[in-house]
Image (tube, rainbow, N blue to C red; front, side, top):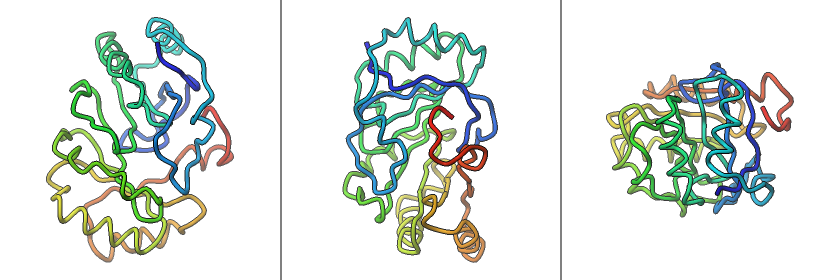
Length: 212
């Protein structure tokens, strides 16, 4: 059994899969309290569902791309079974994780999008850097940038851990805190090998809309 906050069908708003139709499985609970969090409603609210019930609900949408997200989905142990079952059912599965819990046991067929928390998140000390060793070439690391300090920190982390050689790197702004043009200009000036991304769902819908 898993506690599920919501299951919904929308457009993938981030990552290299952005723009594609996707079914989202949002799990309840999170061990982080990021300063810019936009899914606080997932901290506690949700209902118990069996893995069979979850898969049945996902199949209703007739969409092959599925993202397991939160909250922090890795807080619930049965999520590992869920991801394996989804892969066995033929779905292309993504995992969005905050990077503070080990990804070592995540099913290898799952594409992982893992945050590394920047200073302005107030969760810097929660980063589990050993997770970098378990990332695959088709996984992605995300930095959410809210200030020049965040940007400079991210640059240093990319260099220290040689992330360019590990997997694709995503940069996005803290919505409403940093102008996208500033971040883009920094990236271009430094010739960083990263992918800039907008949170597409916040452009299409109102930024506080749930279930999108």
